[in-house]
Length: 473
Image (tube, rainbow, N blue to C red; front, side, top):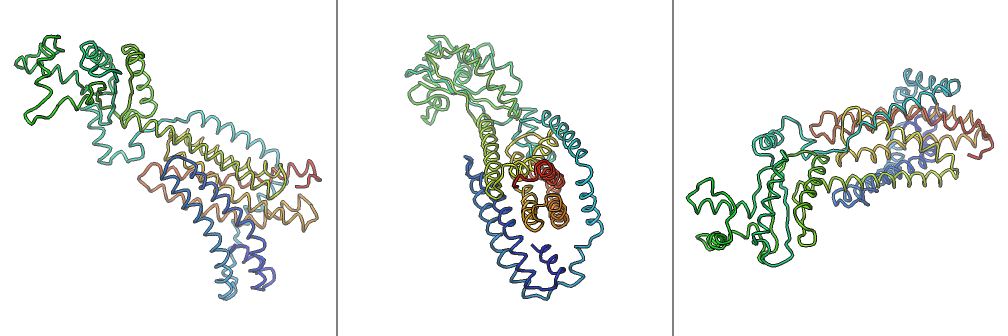
């Protein structure tokens, strides 16, 4: 808005007229850019995460609020100030930016095929990078490697197999079914099977408690650390069931009916993929030992919940991204009443998303909740320049009597300065996050990829326009 105000004032020197034209020519585009950005954030409301829902509501409302305050306050403030002098408008004559705009105009007019070929090569480069992407995430993935929390976790993983709880619940489907000798033997067999997994600790279960009690009963001799016989079981359990304070120790392992028991493990932070494979293998072991008709088995614990929650959240975020793209396509269709303009506006803006994913693949950054947010934010921001350019292009069509070539060149020259300046602001604005120690925040730097689509829009319009001058775009 400020760039447009300065441009108009330089043309005729009338401050009031410059402010009116600023609102007339930029107001609509600014509203659409804020609407699309707000829509990108608002799609988080559709996720099942309360934190993301609150974030989506607050961000979208604030973005629309920024538009209203800017549209009201900027004209009032600048009208109350002195008109801009030559020193304040000299940024419009920036030689470097002017050379860049001139070069873009030259490329648009003379090297269209080269741009198409380069876009195709970039797309191939991006596809290769996307194929390298990983969807694994670790609990402390975003914490610096020298942080005490990370170091403590690795210490426990090295010496105690980890700290993340992994619980196996066994329902015998009948009262006092847990303390039957056949059930205890099945649990013992399962525990022996699970010893082959190096990422989980030794179990804490009813079976281990009974075996330890039997060993204690026989004066702690190691050879007696095993399940008691039927004749020994009831005698030993009568001691185990209550301690000196008359509390039932078995309640730590079984429910009040004796129907359900649990086996507790600690597991290392092996990532979502590793945890998913471990859970799958444990399910196979459970199915081979416990008859599904007689037993019901469940694998739970915060380690499993983390995997389920991460997978579910990523799925929700990708759904919200698809909805955001669809909403923006609808806005474009309503604005231009042409499927070609929808295509022109969406394809260049998909390049930042594709390149963001490619760079994450090349740099080994995994898809997880803290990184998948980047895609929705990147698309909502990157579409802003497209709307500014297309809005100016539509205005120029009326003045040039539907001369597509002239409208493109004029739009490039007039909006080029603002588009480059806003891209620079975004670049350094998000670049600040590189100093963060939180991994998810650092990844926001990849939003800077939206700068590359600046050139592509003009070529797409030029292509469709020159192939069909009566297209009614």
